[in-house]
Length: 593
Ligand code: C2E
Ligand code: MG
Ligand code: MG
Image 1 (cartoon, rainbow, N blue to C red):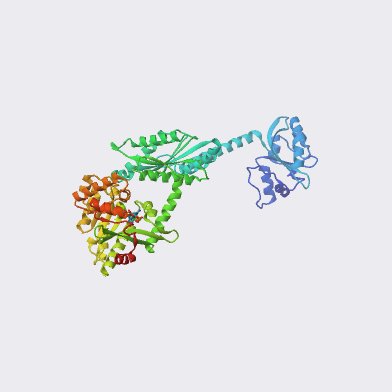
Image 2: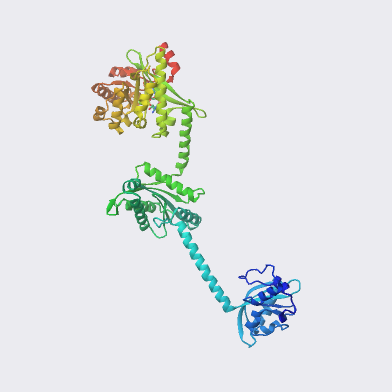
């Protein structure tokens, strides 16, 4: 205890400069225990006063320097000459100025006069100017440092492995969804600076479900692995290939700007690679893939997720366009899609809220003037946009499910109207326009039957379905079989806008129709364009040959009407006769004639 003459243990411990790797000694302990701790510290510890004479040295310091006692010795005695200079010129002023001085490499002088390289930390007490020193042998420090580096490397390796597991797809070993986002986040930042383009390609396999269903999941998994390998094998190592989920893959390419042709070629090559059959368990399995791509930078700010969504949407376009191809994201698409979905939901609401109405345009016998029927034409009383004509909304919902809802509504309304008129003594057949998508939709015939069933007072013969000539020839076999069933139910079938769809005789033979409607465009300039007259004459001949009724559309003048009658067309409709009008107006219009 001789070394503790000048300083109490508590005071010492409270001021001890801690070597960073030693835990704080801040538990309540008795003083002899504390003393033994200081003595057993695995680092040297000593205290100097303002005159730089040593006031305390722990056992480690004494034993490593080889002294029995260091009390009251000047610090300079245990410093080598070079270290003395370093002390005076650097350490001492720093201690005065900052109060601490860490990690100074210098040499202490042992009792036998040898140099002991150490790493020293010092802290100066503001209150009494005492300096507390700790030191550790430089070699020991090096060892510690080495151990530390090793430990850190191990830790980093472990983290890398952990990270690899979270950014890798277990099945294919490719990057996964998370690493796509990470890659994009990093690369988007640099792309503008480096003047490069990042191309995000979303690939979805066509026909993968069928493979899974018929060959089982194990084979499906092997196909996915093989697809991953083919994709990765066709790209540069700097490109990223990831399995995004299920049978979806994402490829990220980085190129110099203005290389869009190259990008397209690259993607087409990927699709080409996937087209080659896969040999799995001795079986040859074929599939293809649909791709969508988008490019960064874009005019506005975009997030990684947004780019993926854009590529995904473009991929969807490829699917719609027949699969096995690539489509590029169109910036207008998102906006168009938004308005499209808005329109659909507005239409749904519109159907429920009775915003749709049918206007009726009379058809007459051109010779006698007698009204022979009416064509129902849809209008939408839009709460904000006012009265909308069919061309304002029908083209936008082409092939959407809502066409069926709307089609049902039209037939239902027309049947109800026929019934209402009949109840008041007006026997007026009504034709409704049906889209090919609606006609071909599943359960069309069931629904038509159900609708007719709801109006037992309305004979099916009072209903006529007008079908666009162009859509009728697109899928003439199916259309004709459905049309045939309708005809057997008593419903009449008309070919609308006839002359615009390039029907051939064989089409017409397949599709036995009751009525041909001469397209408005022929009627409109028949008086000035002799070839139109020839066409009309041909259509009339056609109609006679196939024993169907012929109606001219779009008669706007008396001259047109007379010319048509002279050509042998005895039925017609058009503004000259009457514009389409609300159902309530039809009766008074007929009465006025
Ligand atoms: P569409 O079936 O050929 O109907 C005739 C169109 O020509 C109607 O236009 C009618 O208002 C117009 N029109 C009639 N006479 C004349 C005339 O003398 N001169 C001129 N310039 N036009 C005349 P609308 O009502 O705008 O209908 C356009 C098209 O929309 C229809 O052509 C039909 O293809 C379709 N459409 C109308 N209602 C429905 C419906 O309920 N369902 C379906 N799927 N399509 C419909
Ligand atoms: Mg029509
Ligand atoms: Mg027409």
